Image 1 (cartoon, rainbow, N blue to C red):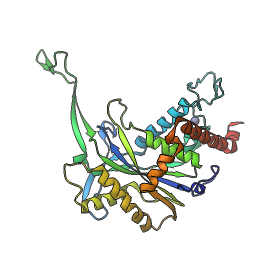
Image 2 (image 1 turned 180 degrees about the vertical axis):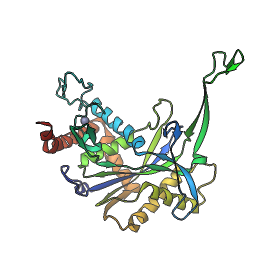
Image 3 (image 1 turned 45 degrees about the vertical axis):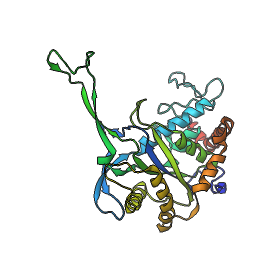
Image 4 (image 1 turned 30 degrees about the vertical axis):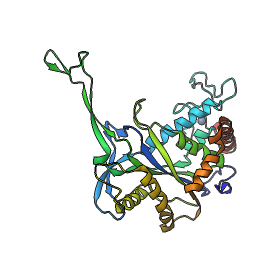
Length: 337
Ligand SMILES: [Zn+2]
């Protein structure tokens, strides 16, 4: 199904051009916040490749996408006992726990050997850095900001329920823009030179992550609909380009109505239809495989990691073997002085 021979059997030290692209349609399932300094992030861009008018789109920066996905993967690594649940103690400087599991403390002390460290990369002051093998870029909302957001007034009333006391109105009123549910963000996640196990590790994180955006337990859920997996010898289209191409295609079918959310099923099927053309149009990479539609669904259903916790445990263990092998081959010596 998926041509596993495309993936290297070990991560090479230098870039070797084994690209695997995961094409997604991200959909908000509730009100979300993708913001910096209290404001939603937006960009002024062309509506489509053909539709020339400029519109303002909501943007989801790279880190807003990858950070929650990393954390989901790390949670699983701890759940299945592959990395230690312990935090790093700066005084003791112990790097593994009693059971021999590496202590990997996110942004505090990266262990440099787990699947998370090796695939998504890390930087530890002057003691070393590993470049990410997962590339993602800002994602843009399919529809314009005006129809994709809603301003909420968040009140913090007094106990009586009123906003004023003794004639003085509380200043505890806050207006906050939220991304509307069913807002769509086409996105490509690219993984370079990962082994098949590490590729599946990243894919699993994408499929399992639900919460994105500002840290809150009440909002910000999203679904990542998988559209295709593309194996190639280079990078394919950008997020903005596929968003604009999808906008054009849906506009031609009158599937984009002002003030209405776009039907996710219509967008999914259209994105699947236009993807082969987008890949063929490019002067870019040679596509080895485009896995989509019914074939992709069958492939996903058969993945051991989707069948049982045993399947997932095996996948995580293989991913750990591959990341450790890379650590032993290229990173471990640098640490010893
Ligand atoms: Zn680690």
